[in-house]
Length: 181
Ligand code: HEM
Image (cartoon, rainbow, N blue to C red):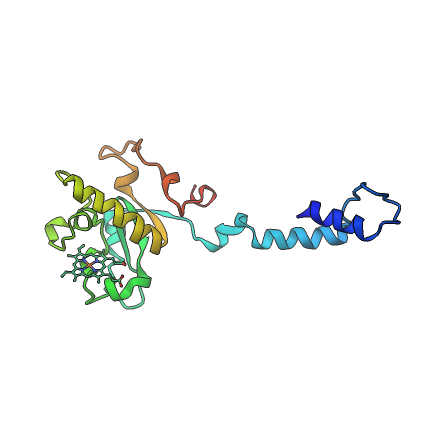
């Protein structure tokens, strides 16, 4: 953009001291407001717009199950915590999928099941089709529609508290590494 403007300025004043083909630096009175504007709309400012993600224990997540009217509604799929408040008609109190909220419901989503026994992070024994369906809903519903607000502690840490080497937050499209750590 700066280069284009420089050319335009030179071209509009063919008799100026700059001479043909020579570019003059943009004066500060132009450069400063332009840079200020660029910074104001730049993705570098996203930390202001997207609150940082956080880690959720099971107890933390259980607080966001839509029981109270003005409380945000969260659910986790594959250890990623989504804010599904905008889908209140699905997830709010008394809504059809309220049972999925306040927990990691990976298995239920994979099996399309609301059976309480399936409302868990555990994917043991799921079929190839169920795993495919899980990935499809994860990508095309949750990641596409809802902001990520954090990760379950189970996704980040192993049972013994050691870091889970398979945790790759940068895989998440909403993830902006400057926001997170
Ligand atoms: C008779 C059974 C069911 C019917 C007729 C049904 C119908 C629907 C419909 C029409 C939608 C799309 C709504 C929209 O985008 O406007 C939807 C979304 C969804 N359904 Fe079902 N459903 C059924 C059972 C289930 C079950 C058992 C689960 C268990 C996990 C489930 C999970 C979901 C999820 C996760 C969504 C996406 C909601 C969102 O956009 O956040 N559904 N369902």
